[in-house]
Length: 198
Length: 198
Image (cartoon, rainbow over all chains, first blue to last red; front, side):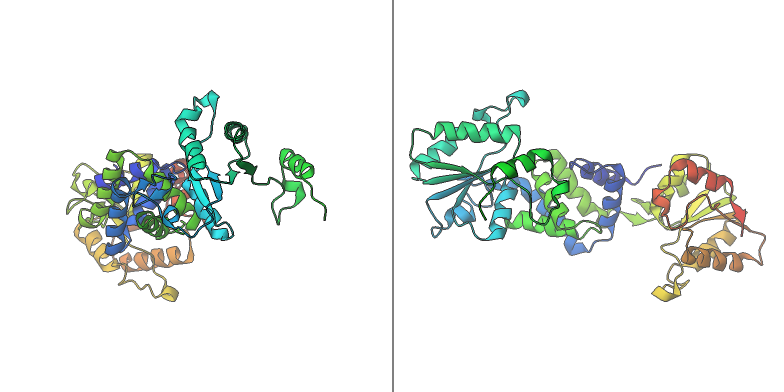
């Protein structure tokens, strides 16, 4: 005996989301049964709309319902700064800080030859063209501190070497509020290397 | 800056599911973007169908797409046994063991005067009527081992005292304080085997 087909389908759909297993999917599907009708309607239509309404901003690749995203539409931001991030989620994080007022560019992934991800796959050309055309003064690389992140950062900085564009990278070190004991040695090594005079 | 409205809505919907917080909701909503069109369609319609297609079986309260659920429709099961569970999820768990071949009855909750849940609220009358009308020989109570569970079990057994119906309870192989959902099938099977008269 199984759940009715509708619930069984719902469980299968939840399981398609990375990180959701059988038990969790079951719990979520049953929880859906207890939601109000208006939440159900919004939930159902929002899921459907992700495919039809959500596009990538034609300038920066950020998620957007229009051809150009809210940030690229805003002409009052600092035109000199461009922050390169891995995914649209990072933009939200930086916007929450509220101190960065430049523009963003989303490269969808990092160069990783072992996984078959080459510079063309993440459209590095589009990024370089934009930097040159928009007269960007500083490109801030805010990518994951990993081998792929370093490779991508190096590749981009090499391509921009002949220009006057300054390429920077966000600092890596011990996060605030974290005990030094809990930081991995590579991070600690970086933190030591990049020490600053008090 | 926020996510586009569709994604923002989706995040809010995910947050309505108990146990899903802001960060997890965000992760799930973004994961939906990467699902295939056919999964998206099924996901969306399944959620909508939970309200329209899923009913409660008119005999046992189990989840069903028809007026009467698959188990109650099955005339080849043991008519002498009735297993009383708290929610439809428990039925799936017992069916997975495969050794119980009686029928089920779902009472939606447990008697808990402190929370204002009285016998009427969980339709104990309907259960008692069914037991008498269907000539059930043994009622197996498979409810949470908690004060509310004990209260409910006692209440039911008291109502059935004047009859010949044997009232049993699944054994305390289920650890106290643990939800039936989280017990492995073997423990649940043992608990079923070692049921005791109340």
